[in-house]
Amino acid sequence: MKHSKASKLLLLVSGLTAIGIGGAIVFLPATFYATYGIELGGDASLVNEIRAPGGALVAMGLLMLAGVFLADFAFASTVIAAAVYLSYGVSRLLSMTLDGLPDAGLVGAAAFELAIGAASLLVLRRYRKT
Image 1 (tube, helix red, strand yellow):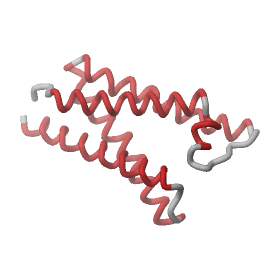
Image 2: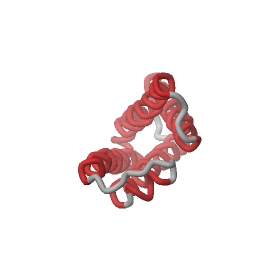
Image 3: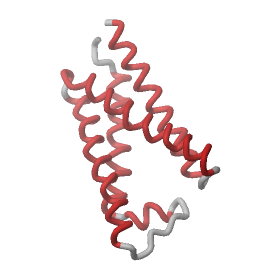
Image 4: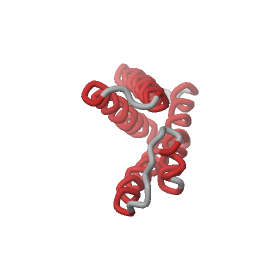
């Protein structure tokens, strides 16, 4: 499949979002989570546990961005975007079912994650056809 402008835009948005959110979690975890009404407090173990997935998000975001610039990596980048965003979105839906509705910002995050994940699946479907 030709690496379309739409697929590049999807990878750009996916990558920058993951890097931005992951970076905020790594460098400003208390501030980031406070926007959702979550207080981390002074528990070093909790903050350590929170920062780790932030670093993983930064790494995944960089891999997504690689697909924008390296055509040979675009398919893998799209698979990564689909996996990351759908895993977050579906996990949030599961939590909403089991635990109840969280802060409205987290519900919005779930919708965004599912949309990016679904768009990534559509792009992957186009790869399959070629």
